[in-house]
Image 1 (cartoon, rainbow, N blue to C red):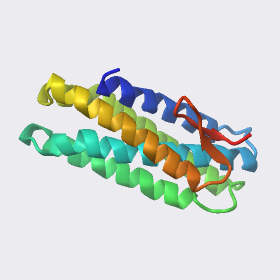
Image 2 (image 1 turned 180 degrees about the vertical axis):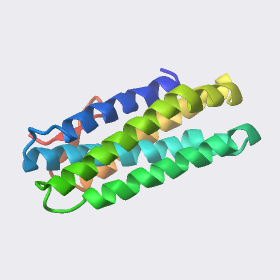
Image 3 (image 1 turned 60 degrees about the vertical axis):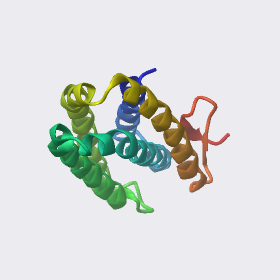
Image 4 (image 1 turned 120 degrees about the vertical axis):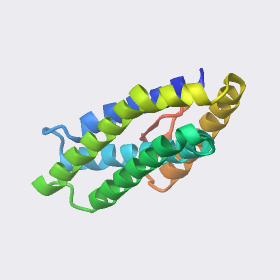
Length: 166
């Protein structure tokens, strides 16, 4: 897979988790489990993406503004995750913040895929994309594992996805 395929794969996982998170029928326990999975995925993806896509883009004049904007959105997502990192996930206020997070994540992913990836595709050479893909994937898996270790109920499966421990 190329760099953009790998990024898109994580984006799809994030979309799936945000839908599960904001399900009106979800119990507080389900919200907790899904939120932890989403938080690990967002943190791992952001770290690897920033290191192996944004940094190379920041080194080019043509990628500077787009990278700054994307970094700003990652920061906004981090702030919403902090707001959601409370013990009681049963209230309406928590669900409204979760919906705001879901909206922000989906907006960011759509913008990246429709605009940022096109700019990056032009500015980064094919050999560099291949190298960055390998580094991104390795770092993403490492960060998922590190994030899952912070939560005793989560594990990283053989497919590299974060899920609940049996």
